[in-house]
Image (tube, helix red, strand yellow):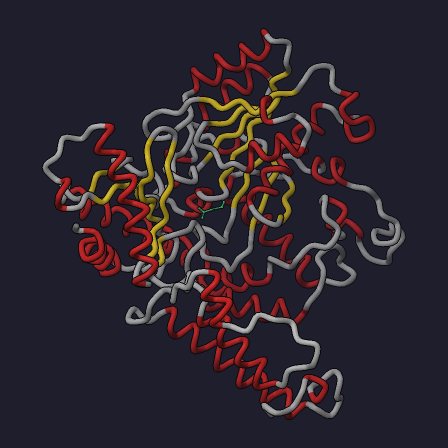
Length: 497
Ligand code: ABU
């Protein structure tokens, strides 16, 4: 089959079923090989090449003439060969790690169905699955009614909250735009929030100057008294405070802002409380860890929640939930008549496409539905508890070697472990700004060594005036205590000097 060209396969060749089967079987073996390597601790996470080297290693050119099926299989194999194995149990680099086999299978089925999520007309099963899953998630949050939608990522989920909040206060904004606003709107978020909040201030016309950053405490949690002070300052400046973003699981520290304290301030000044739980909301699944992090959660009028992060659903799967039904549709509907005809012969409330600002919408639900069916709610809860338990083990191990691991956040609230690895020569040194500066430089050097060795990946970043430090993330239930032991040994091997 390898010497054939795509025209010998279906649909171009209607009698090409045998050749199509053989080609797919060969492709499946390549995919299974990647999955096997991802789960093999003796395999590297990546085979790092600089961009110029990768362009030499792989033929990325677009040819004028067709390539045969063997070449296409080689292309697929090479693509995976140079891809970072984000599901490897020693990949601690990102908020979305792991490779859930069932969710992956769901993604394959989704790709095969190749439909668009705007109408029940062309995605009947998937639209109903979306309704079932989103209702279940709202019940887990504690909302008794409401509405939800899947969005392309947490940033867009947060954007939905920001525009729906404005719509609820100024319904005619939809028609009149900025002219409708009596005063400039202001939103508030912690200095540790995800940058999508600032980005949404730009997109919505508030401007980043009207996205006020509220100071956080040493754990990275917004300080309520500071929020109130800044709200009063905005009022005194003739502005209209309207929206507070409460982060549940900050990107770097994994901190949870205090929901009840922020909700009290929102009640007092008539502001919309949104929870950005893109990272941390999956902890709602855990009876062990949910409280106190989510105490008061139903006081928020909206919450973002990304199953593709702590729930290991295949990328991407991001949801936004509203406490009240109807706002999402009334904010976003454009009544496109070619798509959302009101005289269709079925219940058109299932044409969810008129609730969103996109037209085409990828099917991100099936993989999640199938995964949830496979694990059950109890299985998903067990996974969260397991990952939090691994983080606790990691913290115990790090705390037992304080000369080697300097912890930026001594009591993490999520699976983020933020630390400096201290090489031997710096262990006796007094901890000063100068030492922090050196540790910051060592951090990026050590990351380079990790990537060149291909054995371990941990992300790093500065935060405020803290120089570069590592942020290790556990969001893969396949991670075991032994992987933490390996991380420590590998940091020693690569970074002791
Ligand atoms: N919100 C995107 C998460 C980025 C990260 O993995 O750190």
